[in-house]
Image (cartoon, rainbow, N blue to C red):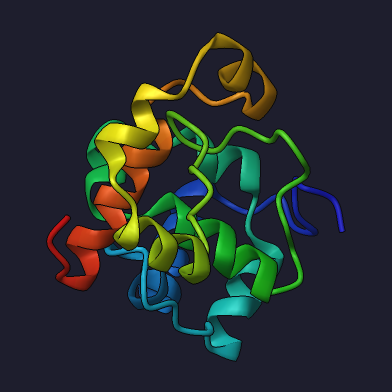
Length: 145
């Protein structure tokens, strides 16, 4: 299915339909994820994605979890193409539970002291980004890091 949707439709109506049928599946926090309803998927299948994505602002992203938007699109068999920009920024990948569990056991001061430019280039991630994302996940599940 094309990213533009099967019906041109009115963008404002698409947004109202998305809010009505999908709101509970895309709000913060990113976890736990809830599979979307068939009514939500019906809206996702017909929505004009470029138009809807163009309406996403920083204010919207304070309430709507873009990671959950990607999850709902995937569950509704209408995934975003690789690299597609929806909203003001791309959602970050969430660390796996195994990664998170391992992180809880690490001495982060020691680990971060061992990261150097070569390792940063290999993993293509700015120093501290993994640590920051894991801290975010910990705050969502009530763990102290």
